[in-house]
Image (cartoon, rainbow, N blue to C red):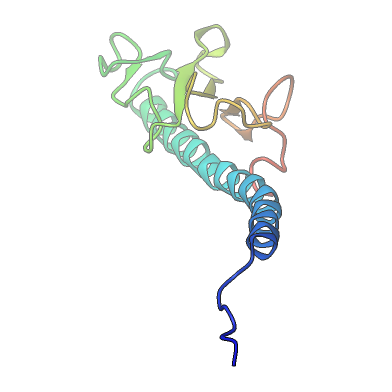
Length: 144
């Protein structure tokens, strides 16, 4: 009796490689998009923290803070970091839009970082809440 060879043929292995490649080409972009969406919460959290700090600052001083640095009422500086908690966004207070009645804070993706290619781009918040105007992220990006 002839002994039958066992194992996989080259064609069978190539079919498996093609199937795995197709699955990976579908799964990887979906996973990357999901990760971008989850990292957006870093910007939202940072901006909400700055909004609360601004309100506290204004309660103690005559106006909202114009910058970060921790100088207090004399220099109009908040004692906060200029990066988001997870480091995906850099924060900036727009001093041109800051006075006794209003402020605008932006969270821009760090250049070359994980969020640099995110479609939402820059998030912004003012004294009334999220700012969707101009080039700022829309309500969908804020998770609403």
